[in-house]
Length: 140
Length: 140
DNA sequence: TTTTTAGATTAGAATTATTCTTGATGATAG
DNA sequence: CTATCATCAAGAATAATTCTAATCTAAAAA
Image 1 (cartoon, rainbow over the protein chains, first blue to last red):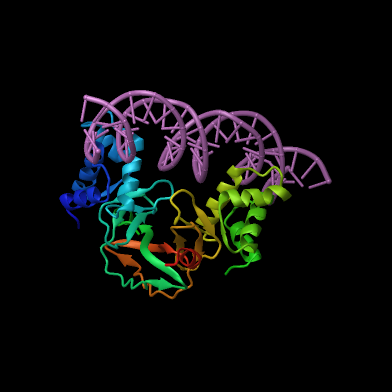
Image 2: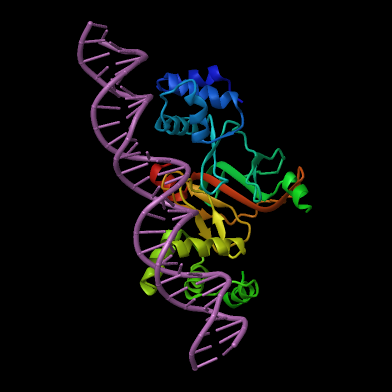
C-alpha cells in the first residue's frame, strides 16, 4: 500500500500538477480505504471545498486509475466504484441488499502473463450471492 | 447449453407469457452465441419486428438473466454485455482497441459455496490487457 | 369461438452516471 | 512580471437504462 507522499512524488515526477482539488481527492481516498463512488467523494469534499466540481472528481479519479493509485470496481451494473486497495482481491455483491464487500480470500489466481497471445495486466474477480445478514434475515 | 424448446417450456412453467417479442429476443440470443448489447439486439430485431421497443429488450434481457438463460458481463465500464454462454469462463478486454473476447482457459476457480458466511452463487472473472492484434501493431 | 383480464408492449419522457465545452483561473518557467 | 499551458468550475450534452401511461395481446374462462 503506497503512502501519500510517495504517490505525490511519483505524480509530480510524471508532470502532473498537484492542485488543491487533486490532492484533496487523493488524500480522501487514501484516508478512507473503503469503496467510493464519484458522487460520494464529491459530497464528502463539498463541505471543505464548496466549489469543487463533479468533472474534477471524475477527471482526477481517471488520472488516479491510470496511475494505479485506485482501482475501478465494476461489480455493480450501474455505477463504477473506486477502491484504493489495489492489490488483487475479489469483491462480493449481495443480490438481496446490494451491499458490496471485499473478500479476503487467498484464491489461487495464478493468471499467466500471457494467454492466447493476449498480455494480461489486470484481473478482476466478482462474486455474487447472499450476504450473512440477509441469510439470517431470510433464514437461509 | 440449453435448447430453445426446453427454455420456453421452463419459462412457461414459471408463469411467464411467451409473447412474440420475448420469443424473438430469446431466439436471437440463442442463435447468435456471441456478445450482445441491448442496442445491438434492438437494431437486429428492428428489421423483422419494426415496432419493438428498447424497454422490451431491456425487460426481456433482465428476465432472461434472472432465469439464467443469459449472463450479464460488466467488463466494460459503460455498458452491460449479454452472453448466452452461461458456463463459467473469463472475459478479456483489450485496453487499446476495446475489443472484448472470451478466454477459454481452465483456470482453477474452485470457489467455495460459502465464504465468510456469504453464499456464493455466481463468479465473474474479467481480464484486462492488450490483445494479440494490438501487440503486433504496437510491436510489444 | 368469443370474451375477459392480467400481464406485456410501445413510445417517448425521465433519470442517472459520465463526459464534454468554454471561459476563467492559477502555477511556473523564462 | 508576464506568457504559457494545464487545470478548474459550471452547466450543457450524451449515453445507457428505467419509468410512465395508454394500448395491446396471450391465454384462461365462458
